[in-house]
Length: 341
Image (cartoon, rainbow, N blue to C red; front, side, top):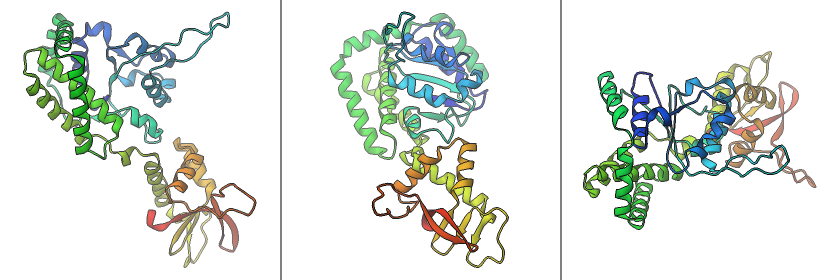
């Protein structure tokens, strides 16, 4: 779960307050100021309780280019396989944890793989969470009272029993999934886990469990109001949007049927039904903007946006480009339906 927004919104105080349930925030909350390998080792240390990492902006240039990989590492629950100096395989680190972190800008870029968006719930902080005075009061509180709530929560978990909690988790999950069918199911499971933990903690501090579940459920609903849908994190949906913008920005470089002249740089052709895109400038744009051109073409063929050439007899490969004439010259272009753009 990644919270991002203005630097004065109170995100760090909220993060440290959450960490204080388990123990001292000074010892528990980490920063992104570390090497990718060093940060990848943190989940094993936080096994069976949340991992808190603050301030994405402190990350170095190498990690900044690989946040998507870091998300995969944490969510997979298994570390890298390594050898000792004697060529003996080291014990592979494993963990069960959730990562809660903060930053001023979103963690994943728009060109990241859909799998990383599935594994990371990015929540924009749209307004101030806590005032400066509230932050100071809460900070004074957790500096002296950290760790007590966790012990009370463990006692309450024992009292309620795992079977009872599993039933409530399943009920929450099914209810949320039915109300928000367009939300990624992994996000539903994650928020339901946090919702149940929130309810258990409130119950441990004296609230009736049914009332605690009701309050936690209200928080979950607010989260899902700003959660990306399946379509919004879909690779093909974002790739289509990218191609749409590419055509729009470079429209002057496309030749139309009634064109009076040919532009110096020809990016393709537009007729009544189709848009034909020259692969070379699109490939160059993808490389500059961090998109995988081959994957983009394959995904858009899969969803029917790009219409590939028919198979040549005896050739099992799909030929993504179609042969057309542009200004008297034969060219091979990607054929895109106008309706999809």
